[in-house]
Image (cartoon, rainbow, N blue to C red; front, side, top):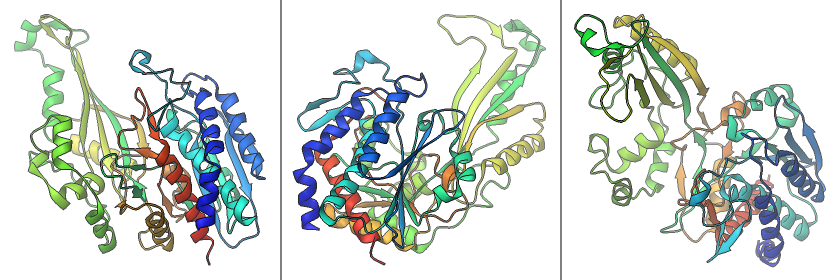
Length: 449
C-alpha cells in the first residue's frame, strides 16, 4: 500500500494535468458545446491505460465504454459522466469557468467536482496501480455517459441492450464528498427515487374580473384545497397507501445513522431558519433526511403574480410537486395512488401529469463490497467516514442497475462547499489526491478473493 500511495504522490503533477485539461474543455450537453472534443479526450486517456475503448452510439451523445480484462475473478466498474451544467451566471465566477484556476490549494472550474474530478481520479488510480504492480488485481470497466446533466435519457436502453458490458461484481458510482469543516469523507450506497408531477385545474375559458369570484369557481382555490389533503401538519403524507410498500431499515442500515455528522446549528444558521420540521433533531432528523419519503410543493402558478395589483380571477392554476421515494416505492405506483386520492376526495377534474421519474436504488448493506469500501476509506483518511445508506437526493442509478443486484458505492473528490451546478465550482487538490488513493485502495482490496 505504501508503494502504491507513494506512486500516486510522485505522479501528482501528471494527474492534476489530466484533470485541468478536462476542465479546460467545455462539455455542456444541454447546448451541445464541446461534447465531441471532451469524449475524444476521455477516450484517449482510457486508451493510454491499455483499455479496450468503445464508443457506444445512442440517440443522443455517445456512451464511452472501456474494459481492461486481466482474466481475474472479479470485475469492478466505474460509472461517470463527461458532460457538465452550463456555467451561468458568468458574472458570479471568480475566473473563466473553462480555464481552471488554482488558488490556495483549490481548483475552480465548471465540472471539476461534477464530475471530471472523479473521472480523472479513477483513471489515475488505475494508472498508479499498473505502474506499481504491472497489472490490476481485478478486471476494470468504465461506463462514462454524456447525458447525465440532461436526465440520462439513454442510460436505461444502454443497460438493456448491453448486458455483457454491464456485467460486473460491483460499481463505484459517480462521486462523493468530504466535509470542509472536519475533513470527514462521505460514503453512500444508494439514492432516493423521485416522482415529479404537475397538477392542473381549469376553470373559465379565460381570466375574468375578480368580481366574478362571487359566482364563478376559482381554480386556484380548488387547487389549494386539493393540496391541503396531501399532507398534514405533522408532515405525514395522507395519500392512501403511500407508505404501504416502504421497506423497513435493517439494523446495519440504522447503525449508519450513528456515523452521520449533521451540524444542525450550522445548517439552521446557513439556511436562516429557526428549526427543522416538527422540531426534529438527532438520529430521527438523519433518518428522515435520508430514509423517509417526501411530498414537496416545488412551485405554484395562477393568475397575476407580477408587480402591482391586477384584480383577476384566474382561468387555470397548476402546481409542480416532487415525491422523493425510498426502497419499495415506485413512481408508477405513486402516480396511481395520487390519482385515486384526488378522485376519492372529489377532485376528479384535476389533471395530473408525470414530468420525471426515477426509482430509488440501494445496495444491500450486508454485501461484502460495502465493508470493502468502508475498510478502504478508513485506511486512506485519518478522519472516520460518514456512512449513508443513501443520499437525500436522486440520480440515475436505477436506470443502469435496476434488477441487477450489483452493489454500488459513492465516494469522491468533492467537498460540502463544492458549489455543484453553481458559480465557482471547486475541489481541493488534497481531496483529489485522497480520492485517487481511496479508489486505488478499493481496487486493491476488491481484488482479494
